[in-house]
Amino acid sequence: MEHTDLSLEIENEFVQNSERVKSVDLHPTEPWILVGLYSGTISIWNYLTKTEEKSLKISELPVRSAKFITRENWIIAATDDKCIRVFNYEKMEKIIEFEGHADYIRSLVVHHSLPYVVSASDDHAIKSWDWSKGWALHRSFEGHSHYVMQVAFNPKDPDSFVSASLDGTLKIWSLDSSAPNFTFDGHLKGVNSVDYFISNDKNYLLSGSDDYTAKVWDYHSRSCIQTLEGHGNNVTAVSAHPELPITLTASEDFTVKIWDAVTYRLQTTLNFGFERVWSIGYKKGSSLVAFGCDKGFIILKVNLQAAK
Image 1 (tube, rainbow, N blue to C red):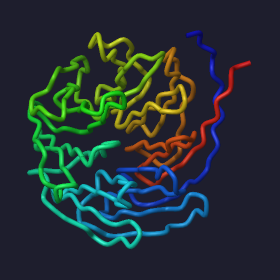
Image 2 (cartoon, helix red, strand yellow; image 1 turned 90 degrees about the horizontal axis):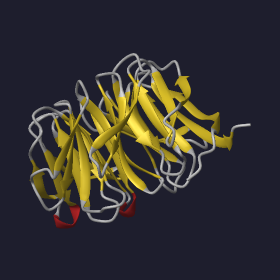
Image 3 (tube, rainbow, N blue to C red; image 1 turned 30 degrees about the horizontal axis):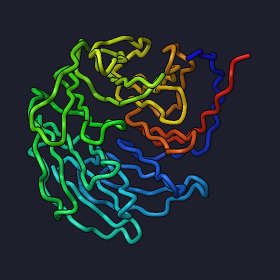
Image 4 (tube, helix red, strand yellow; image 1 turned 90 degrees about the vertical axis):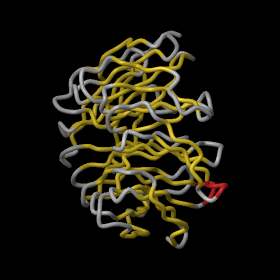
């Protein structure tokens, strides 16, 4: 596939000051962003009207991950009190609350077709939960030796997911097995974030680490094929945009970097003035991208054109 150099045009859609934002998620059909705050609050903002539509204090401790489960009209949120809570987002009524882990819960990911949510925790464990069976524990996944910071489902394989851990590794898992299938090892420090992406019809992983780098991994050869260097502090979040040929990395150095997903060249560096950047979200079927930071959240539109 021949590559054309890209020209990026960034439009600010919505910038909002708030308490520290640890989690952002964009609703696939409504003009909503769900933010999880360090203060223990979840909020839904309408980015067209630029107003907060709903807000709920759910804990005295930080919300580190909050996601829409749109096919059920739910929000699921995980907090440092080790609990997982599910709410109906029409009325913000709580459906269930249960203790999910023995330590802070860092990440939640919703399966795209099955009634499963996978959670990752500082207790070194990953768990899958089945909401069709009253949120029963489906399986525990053991193998990491440090905090598990993030999990992500494979968009090409509904049975497979990846985890990133401060033990410095990524691990690939199947939903039907408690032991990992294989491990990616190559970062010099802990790994905070991971995402899948498809480029030239090949499967890759993108990871971000406390070694200040992001890495691109070939899923099939299980090797690192590119190291993305340039951040001046821990890489806290990574995302491969599903609609655009770009990857994004966010850092405690206050910046977001946008990279060409084919050549891996740095396209631009953004500094919103909101200090550390903790999370990245996107809206499927659009060019919108959201970022959660120490001092608020930002939604951008990324327009791509062939470079002249």
